[in-house]
Length: 554
Ligand code: SF4
Image 1 (cartoon, helix red, strand yellow):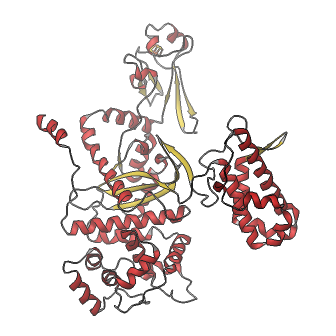
Image 2 (image 1 turned 180 degrees about the horizontal axis):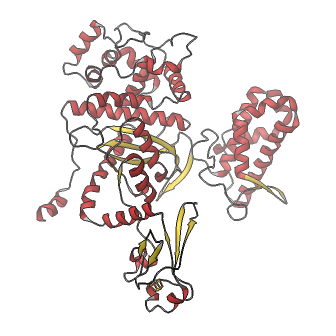
Image 3 (image 1 turned 60 degrees about the horizontal axis):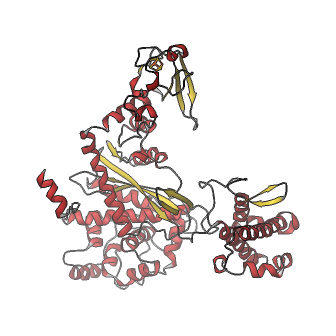
């Protein structure tokens, strides 16, 4: 394989001749090279390899391109290495001689490790986007849309009993590798019967009491092992450094606690369970989390895809965020904007669903990035808003300068004070006069209390005004028509899941899962660029004959 960092890869003449004869109209990889040039220069990945030890044996720029091409076709590392050796279109895109013998497939795995260790996963997409920007395929300050989907971790879903058993088994396996004699002296023969095989190979008890007894037995074993590692023998202090022992310690803290009777297995009723957002669900992928969204429960991660959505350019993915499955979408909005700002790819209008929008996001995106967040906000769910005749917050006139509110009866508020909600977000609490409210003829529409005065809670001024304005806007047909543009991102998610297997991660851990999502986004972008350069327009959503009848009738 060519080893030197050339400014541009030159395709060997023989390779070019045979490739053009084989693909007279070109294929996706040939078009990529012909129209975009070299996507990844070696210099961009120079930090991956130590300078003193010399140049990497493989060109990192080409390895980056092979990683993307691998995900274009869903190939394993071995299949990708074979494709480099045997396929003429791959040799053309990579600028390789026909006789090039390629490389061992393990190089790809090592390259991915280095990308993750150096936080360079995003470079695969960022460098590709620079090429698209140069070709003016991404408009400056235009429209983009974002949506998320679940990603299933590459682990088996374990119940709590299997989790503690499997965690202890994983720790025993690691210790048996580094300190076999020490471990043999520490444990009884019973341990071999209990922890020699995968825990789901056992017929675990179905009875609740028996399950608790087994969980407690495993708990005592794990606690005994941790005690021996930390306090039993000072010469074995190195065992504390083992990753599987640290995972054992964390899982035991999450799954067990102590009360007066000693060690107990946590339960929801008495001791409380560890929150899903921090609870380890498998010793083999400690960053995966269990989450539920509506009726879907999954263990793994969540990916957020942002794409352009202009009429005259292909819809290209501009940003990929991979998070824990329990991270709310609303926490990602400002992160996406900051990442897009760093790439000089901020849109003018950003179309998202309700999970990404709240009053704070509306104000912050506009003030910091001058981005209009187009999406519905949560409606007012108070009983006053649900009751047609009720006085919800929109029925009050707020005078921000004088810090008073005027109720529908024309009465002024008595108290205006700063407060905080349960998440420590700032609020303003406004209280009316108790005596006035007590004698109010329309009190039944305003407050459910027979004695207390009406209180209202307001967001800070900008947020309150943005929220009220959006609640009003989202009921209009103009907003509905405009917001319809967001729905197109569902097609992108569908393409990513069905064609590129986005929903299943191949790897353990958040960083490598993110790398897979980035490579998948690059693959989608290349396929869309190829379709666009061949004048293939995206298909419109199909409508059934029966549904069309209604449109015609209207
Ligand atoms: S109950 Fe109090 S706040 Fe509500 S309308 Fe009557 S006077 Fe105004």
